[in-house]
Length: 276
Image (cartoon, rainbow, N blue to C red; front, side, top):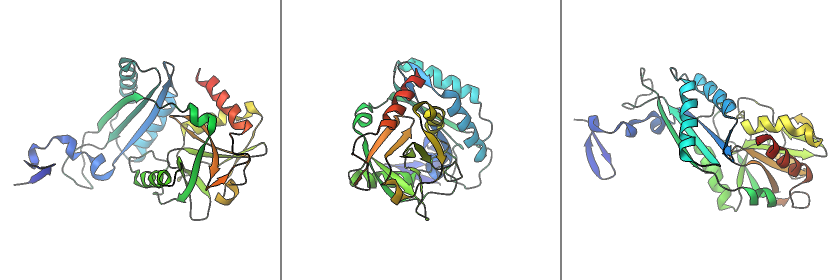
């Protein structure tokens, strides 16, 4: 007899709810997306779905109807009645007895709509960030459920009184944040790491690169070294749930005058125009 324990309850394995046999739980075997709405309007849904479709293809989860996912996202969000919502969804390979090479599983979909946190204070005052070694796997361009290094990095940052952890590779170059894209401004040059296998193709990053010229910046897609970031005129992160957020202290060193910089504030305004 195959047995399992859930909490303190002994259950025959063949009577387990399939939720306990999900490959997302066993292996982190799945991909996810997070998008948001602004004042009753979904933002960048098609861009998020395109990235989701790519992630599914990269980990070889087949048979997923993207049109059906779009309908579920829209209808669930509309039913929630939340004007400023965070919409999270994922697909795992399926459920079954734990087996690294299982075939023929039915992909499992999960979606949740919640109220988004108010980031206005962080945008007004800025946040603090610290660097951590980048211990993630080599395919961070896939938005997978394997986020343990990100979780540990963010937890460490919070223990140290910081809002975000910034990953640094073995050569001392910044890749991205634990849950954000990272930008530095030197003079009028906007600097960010070019997309690669160790960089998530951030949707918010994508939109920042559509509006930077509007505020008088020039783009330099070049990795920033951790020690150089402290010398920047401005730093900021970009993340779907908050869009553009200034970083005013980095590795306990104040950035410029310790206040959100002029270009970052202009980008926040431009992003607000964009979402409307």
